[in-house]
Length: 263
Image (cartoon, rainbow, N blue to C red; front, side):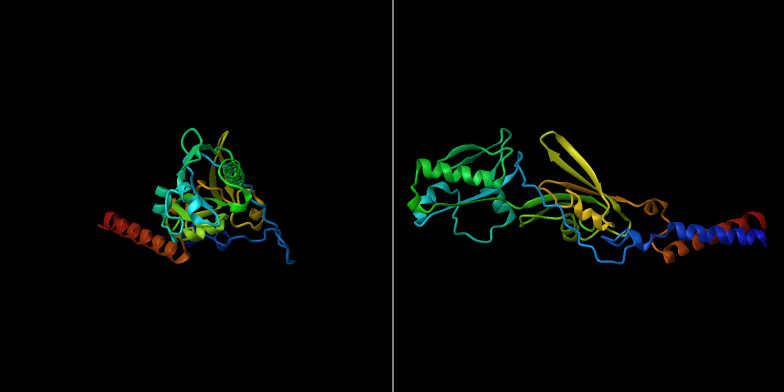
């Protein structure tokens, strides 16, 4: 009787240990057990400073479109460009940190923000080619917000979103969500900086993660979602799966026992 009870306790223990608790699956929980509503102020993202291999979309407009046509590589009236079109028609930052703009020539942009580049181009145009009456209007944007995500995620790979700011939650939602075996408590963000690569883990089950400077992504960030230990055990993700696995193993063990010792 004691052996049977011991086996039952062992099976129940394995069953509970192998299951993934609900608290490990819910995003942005309040961990302080407070029942009062608290306002979480997300940290504002810092302006992105350009790096090599970034692709820029630069548009120059004026009252008379013919005056600025020579500064464009394509027809600026064209709408709804695809991602590939933006790549081939955009201005890529080379290894020296420069872009080549028609007529204006090479412009060093490495380490500058988009607003700083826009002001530099406007200043050069007004100083060398136009007067204020031409009403020059310059727009400088990244040709899409690009990031790469890998690991326990619905859809891995390099993604591009056409918006100014992207949070880690938006990036995950755009990639098919983290799988049930993904570790939401330690999502790693790898970020290239002028001094090297920075790595930081985010606990997406904690609402205070919104205060982290890594909550807002930067272009070219790499996101890695590591697996939970339950995946390596192979016993199952839910209680039913774990029970089925244990039952199967018990049946196999019983069959082997009878074949070896009952003949």
